[in-house]
Image 1 (cartoon, rainbow, N blue to C red):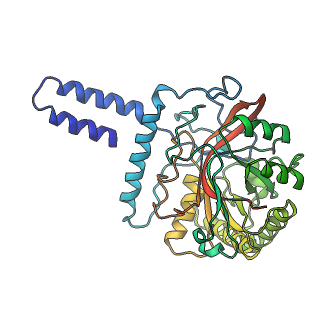
Image 2 (cartoon, rainbow, N blue to C red; image 1 turned 135 degrees about the vertical axis):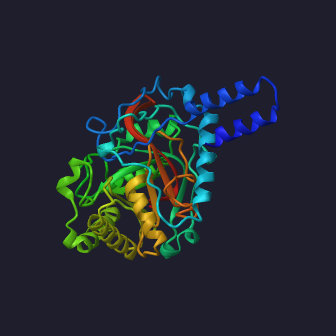
Image 3 (cartoon, helix red, strand yellow; image 1 turned 60 degrees about the horizontal axis):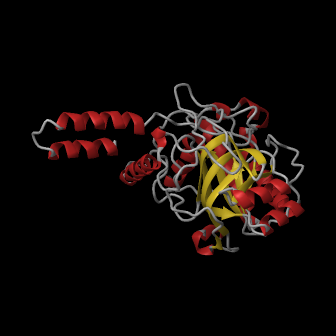
Length: 387
């Protein structure tokens, strides 16, 4: 609505000239181009062959990403981010209810009528460079300040199987990414056998300049939408016990890979129906128990989910004053401009300081240095692994 209002005000300033009707027509036309109805959510843990929308176009050449199309040019994406930021500021004084932005999709599929993610590299609305910008920042995380987290700002990607070292070296040299998500544990991982993910791999990739985002895919919500996650649902009668046990397992697995206290560990909770009270309560009990165990062992608990389910749920709990919530959040909302400040379900003050990751595109193929990967793209200002 922001772009429309700007054009309407301009039309009034034209006074009584014949150009008024052309300005209004241009405003309506531009509105249709700049604001397509897009809202897609990723199941980032599922390989591209079985989940996620098809890429709108693979990387055109080695180290090259297709240019942005005419509907999502850089100026339009930045304007959209500005509009979202204004809406988020206005929301800060509302009654505390999370917006209803529609239903999250199952298994990363784009809902009917929605636009698939564009395979173009979006402009960085935050102004972050494409290089590693990591630092220790204990003051950012008061609940986790015993060991200072390491914060990374910039672009990253996640992929189901940790790539081999040759691929990591090639991508470090020629891609815009400096952080990578790794699925290091959890009974619901799609890629359970991580043939490359060893202590040595962690040491070498970190030494080469990569920042790591450890992802733990544990038990899933009782009302998880993805059928591939149904065998791993939380038992509502044992939600706290399961969260406690799996939180301890996450810390143990991270330690075995050489990740020190102060590392962030991200719990992956795929899209679920938070409107079902019993399901939502069990899910929150599990998450809080997992967080407590991870914190007790000196790690920073993070949380990944779709923006319209798990993230909206955590924000509602935060507004209610619930304790033992994640120290950082990673929200999946595909097909929109990457933003760390204008996610509709979050108030501007929520996880505002070095505590957000936006997964803005999923299941796209890129080639850098002669090595091809299917990835999800992420914009990051959040804690990562420490070695």
